[in-house]
Image (cartoon, rainbow over all chains, first blue to last red; front, side, top):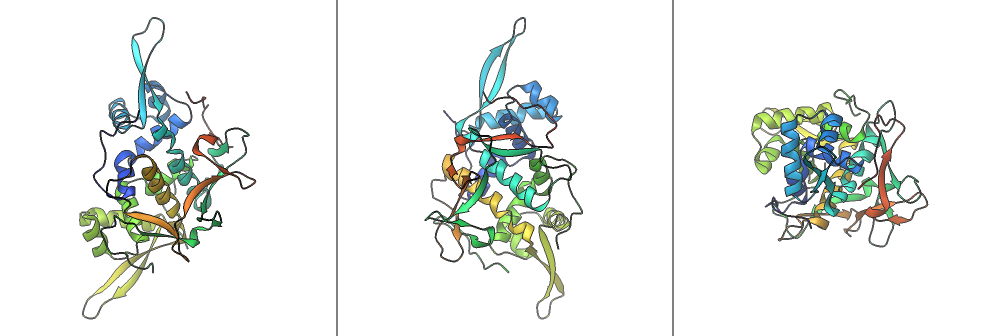
Length: 159
Length: 159
């Protein structure tokens, strides 16, 4: 079950998402969780994040229902917690892939791609595409951000 | 022309993206720019962001080739700068839409959607879909993040 303890009060979906994961370390912890990491020491060593900040960020991600804690115990050690993506956390693949595709298009690293999105069954590459209501694929230029039913401000044409 | 003055040194596309826009105010400035805002006073008044922080964030977004500065002058006023999304900045629609869809699926606001993505020509809603190499639509569960050619760490199966 995902918890909503730290739910955002904004109606803007972007603000709501950023309230949940809009902090660089949080997104990088999720990235590493999507790579299969689950343990405090793995996140700390891989990310080089100070322990106190890692503890705080893991707590926020658990409170936001993105990670869930499970207990594990290795022989001769005390019981520790591991951290696993919830369904909501797995859903952040969408955000990660958007960041990846945006970077691949506009500012690719000279050494190539550190990660790719694949069809888990076949290993073939997949990508995010804009799709209209009748299934047609659209380009970025074809799409606009428009006020929804809960919009609170006046929007202006792009110039 | 987009500038790469503040290019990230990482190979990870997510780190590279976060180095460019991974800060809440930066993403909200881009959000408002996608709503058609161009002026310092619009961003300041709409976002409630302190002027010194707004100045710094606009400077970073310009340095990263996401916004470009243009001069404008109103009668009786001094010349001022307005800020317009570059092609790279427009590409962030993808990231905004990912945040929106993720929120819509897992933590929608009680009052409904503040914004929606539409086909600019028809006003019909559009969405981001995962698509395989032969054009088939996949679900989030179908896709995985996998190491790319520039991966530097060992990845583990998700548990």
